[in-house]
Length: 67
Length: 191
Image (cartoon, rainbow over all chains, first blue to last red; front, side):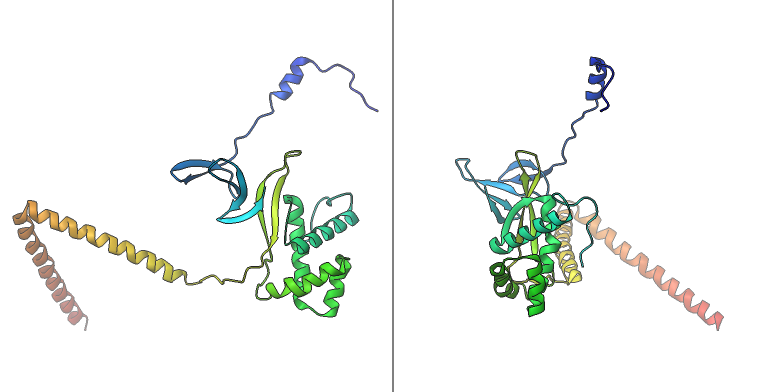
């Protein structure tokens, strides 16, 4: 089995990891009850009651799935 | 026929994928709505819709072809007797995929794939009627604004408006008459 000959230096490890970059997701802006909400497009949203308990998932005004 | 899938199969190989999709289709027909990953749902959609097309045909040959995919006779019976009449009017598009979110363990995109069993509501094709209807309110909205502008101007400066308007009316009329006369003369010359 082929194995590395040398220990990988800290600098080269860090140079490789410096190329890992996070990309910001594209969000859609909607106004619900006067509050501006950013969310992923084409994805079901969680409907909560007044206490903040998650009830079900909703998409385009239709109940899609339970949680 | 659906487009053949390219790339690696789901599961361990072609046979594994066939079984996996057959089991998913059986679960979909049993429960009418199942939660799975986006990749599996997208592969399942053509398989399940083809089986529903067979179910709509409804004869013995179609039933045997469905039984070649789904082994469970009770599921096939339910598909032919309950699901097929509900989608009889629908011309394809028997399933609906809704994205839900990402699974916790591997961040896989989860979806809800469900049978579309609601009665068909055909779309209204009259796009021109809607566009004209949209244009008509716009015109009606514009007219009151103009009327208000006219109403405001006379209150402030009545004399200028009255004097300016007759001039504007006369000038085009005289010019138009001259143009018409010239045109008539030219026409006579041409003859």
